Image 1 (cartoon, rainbow, N blue to C red):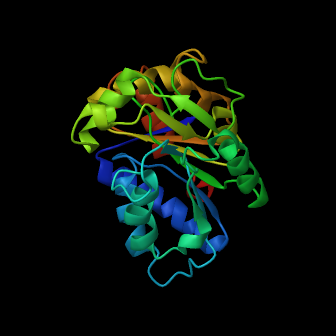
Image 2 (cartoon, rainbow, N blue to C red; image 1 turned 60 degrees about the vertical axis):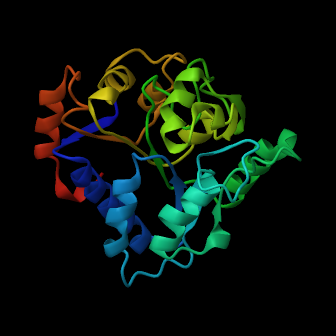
Length: 259
């Protein structure tokens, strides 16, 4: 079972996650981070900035989870732009050490294999930040994705495009295809850190951590990982049957264990 931590707000979640990431970077200056986009990880990135003040981050490496296919990399909603804007620049990371899957149509047939090779060459991801969709997807691994899947091109469901339409002028502007790390790729990270906020994520979270492990709920893959931490606010925890247990175990967890 993943460790589930229930906090009062997304800001509290961001601070808790940032503490762990900063600790990791201080201990290992060449840490490899798996970087999620969207609104969920923003409190983490905001909280990291003061915690990394004075810390040498010149060797930190990063791999984004996914990218839209066919969207101009300079488009403000391309994940290359988002990562540069929300992570690389504020945290002072070296842009050359932070990679995003190549969503250009030219060469897309081998872009997944290229990304897998790059992650392997970096020694693998130390800590992977994750959000979860209302349908349970992580990365852009939609329901039905194989737990053995690697980085590849996927077709986005209507639900996911509707969820992401808030970042675009219109749903028709949301690309229909993406390139995403697979569930198998994600599960190879040494630590998974999944965050979720709001009542709209409560059902997905409950099914991911307390329901059956199934490809129809990709987020349930966290149950297969030996070191997975799930941090949720009270609203996202609203359907957890074992919420009392999670609160008690977190309250009494030895400090030396960390996340």
